[in-house]
Image (cartoon, rainbow, N blue to C red):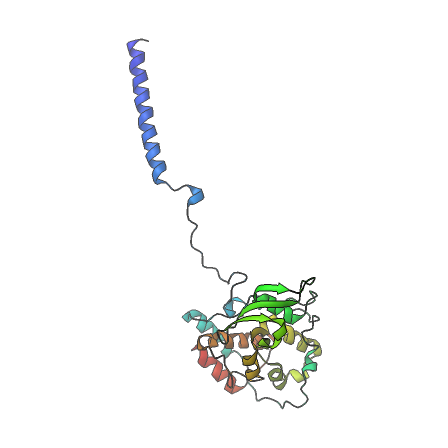
Amino acid sequence: MTITKRIAFLLFACAATSWLVVATRQSATRTPDARRPAPAITPSVSPVGVSANPLHNPDGTRPGLVPITSRADRAKSVELIKKLGVMEPYSLWGYTRSWFGENWADTAIDVPYAKNGCRTRDDLLARDGEDLKFRPGSRCEVVAMKLSDPYTGKTIEWRKQDAGQVQVDHVVPLSYEWRMGAWEWPEDKRVRIANDPLNLMPVYGPINEAKGGAGPASWLPPVQKIRCAYVTRFAQVAAKYDLRVTEQDKTAMLAQCL
């Protein structure tokens, strides 16, 4: 090899070595794409299976309730409640549960879960319960589960042998709906509101019995931090079905979110 070729070879080798050192240093400080953390994303709705802010759950297919805490969301709740019409209630005369169809009928029209072959109550237990167990051979009948009750904060280990420990609350009670004009609705509308998951919340049985047919002026969940969420859900149901509320109930609802 001539001197000229040797000098050229040495210059090439030095350049290659320098390039390799730089590349090695760069690769040591660079995070590979596969390991780069994803950007933080705040979802606009709660993930499936996670208790939901009612404002992010307009069809009622996500479980439970979480407190409404942000100023912006509470303002949206106030705006929703303010739009509700008011009236003096009619008499309860003539009311029976049967006017709203068979208990937990799967025959409602245009509501989630309807006509899926399962009773509405089981659909709601499956929506809100955890560690679900079904009757052998059934894809519908829930026989055991764990429920976090938003109204009381209790965690209930429920078994069907003690069915009354968990009851499915109509957020807007059926008797309340009757007094606010549902007595003159067509039957299919009464069946819809009775089986609409937006209007249904599995809760601790004794607290549901204590509520009865009361509106928000007479009854609110014992857990204070959930009350704005509760009255928001009450307002969502009323708005969906063009149902008016009493003046006293509207005042009480606004007070929970202001």
